Image (cartoon, rainbow, N blue to C red):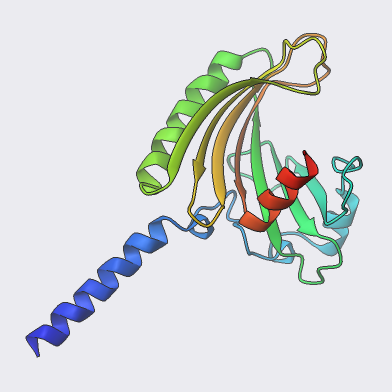
Length: 193
């Protein structure tokens, strides 16, 4: 009987460890990868907020939705979702929450450190990578992205990125906290080659 109890304890302990490294346990405004967007927004809200961010993609597999200042949002100014074309269940494969830092990139960096610290504690077995790159949309090379990403063995990614736009670009500096499923991430990487 003791052996049986010990085995049960070990099984349940192992399950909690694996759950801590599943991005589906991480939420942005209550939403996560694999959820249906219909649990949070009406079909009309989704259709009204479709954007053309993926217009230059060769393979049209996903469409982006961005919703600003929704009444349900407690933390983020905006949320971006990517949904598969022709998926009648509106399953979320990519979700990003944005906090705007108009002319306050240092505020973004401070919040990024806080978020990264929490993600480090939550996803202990993920590979953490930090990069600083120039944003390819800015031909002057003055817009920058500071990324802190957590890569999982199955290819999923969780990250906290600060976008520091140059004065020449008509965008607001912001923090992006997001999750990408392996399938979405693979599609995105193939599109950028």
